[in-house]
Length: 123
Ligand code: HEC
Image 1 (cartoon, helix red, strand yellow):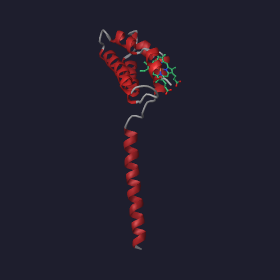
Image 2 (cartoon, rainbow, N blue to C red):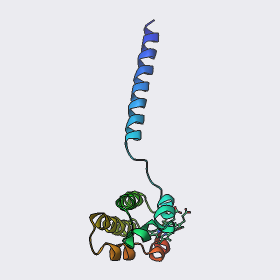
Image 3 (cartoon, rainbow, N blue to C red):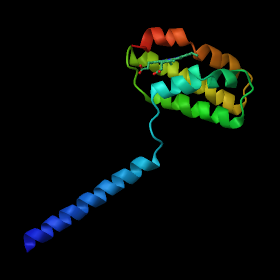
Image 4 (tube, helix red, strand yellow):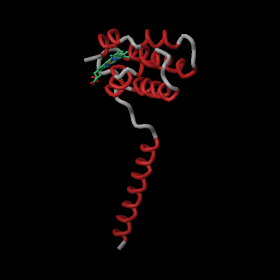
């Protein structure tokens, strides 16, 4: 009888812990992969559109979300410090675009240097 109660109690505790963890995970934004950012922001042209000054406020916000997501990734290749510097420059540029800063287009263009980053960090 006691054994049964212990088992029930531990099953209950396990379920509660699991659900709490799952809820916490769902509440946070799902992580964004490097590949997603490349497809949507780089190859997809969102970065270019924002740099051209023709993007809507939603598009600028989306670019910032993508670049922040990119910065949270670890580079598949190359030095972590270099990756941080490059992705931080992208985040700063997207933040400047969201704020409507005059130098945002220039910042975006120089930060989104495809070749420099691919040479250093693309496997
Ligand atoms: C801050 C660094 C960085 C910058 C800037 C960057 N890339 Fe990338 N890109 C990467 C990395 C790292 C990968 C490899 C991802 C992997 O294999 O996990 C990649 C992969 C890609 C891919 C393949 C994605 C896939 O999985 O299908 C494309 C396409 C791409 N980049 C386009 C571009 C273009 C176009 C630009 C410039 C406008 C650009 N990237 C700028 C880091 C960067």
